Length: 414
Image (tube, rainbow, N blue to C red; front, side):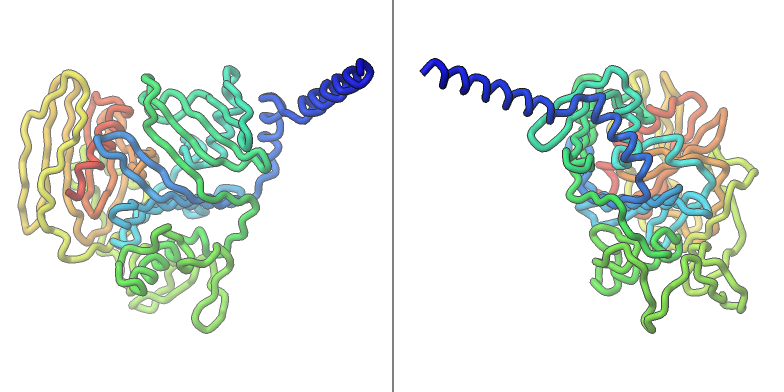
């Protein structure tokens, strides 16, 4: 009996040792992650992002494509309004597209190298490998890291990242503030390494027209629910036209006068730009032109949208006054704030025009992409539901601009 008990004890000890040998610690996982990123050629992910920045959580469908060396496509779709905005990077630069309104902005930027996004795999892995004080947990099917949040706002302090044990694909990300309240939550429904993209997957013109074409098919006019830049419902593989011929990445097409364009103008139906101008009322704009991107809006978008006020203001700041400006049939709003910081908020529906932006950089607002321009006098610009917003100030910190902009999202479109 004692012999049997002794043998049983030895078996249990050996089993425990073998199980322990099969486990990985944080250092081993970090080593593997560095190898995954180093060998990674492309990926495609999709999921749901929830912002807990207002009284009511805001949900967005998010789709991410990446192909080495520097091609990116991020589609954010408002789950409630079914409006998609796309951030695109290709050889021509960085674009912010709103296909349902046929609007595009282009500017030169090293995004996302200079700024991470919570739904980009490289950003998450860089946060893990770069935090020497990282916390690590081994759960049943996931490796979980608790690390510092490296985003462009002081409001986001920590983030918890769940990675699939089998292939290190992201499963969930929670970003919290200094009070441990979850501010941003991303749940990935799918994530695939080695995704195969077609030649035109990162082409600006193709991304502008594909969502519009699908909107016309479904009768919504707002594009697909996931905001795909290729034919709706299809995997991101090489596409063909109706005749079965392959479409080039940058189609060379004649305009109304027979001239050849490179497909990067953002103007459909052969429309040509009517000149350029800086944003009126944007003190952050300068005479130096960073890039020129024509826009085409529906002619009836000058209707009143009310006065959209932020639900957040920095401590010691109060609304001084608000003005509704209606000139030449255009409706716009100007809000002025004073106190600890002084700034103005301008709201308008931009009409058909070619827009020239001063040199600017991309800022992640969570629900969309914004652009910061100016130096001593800075302006944050973003667009939601066809309304363009601009916050301009000489003393308002960038992280406060982002908080104000985020608080306006819940109010817009009401």
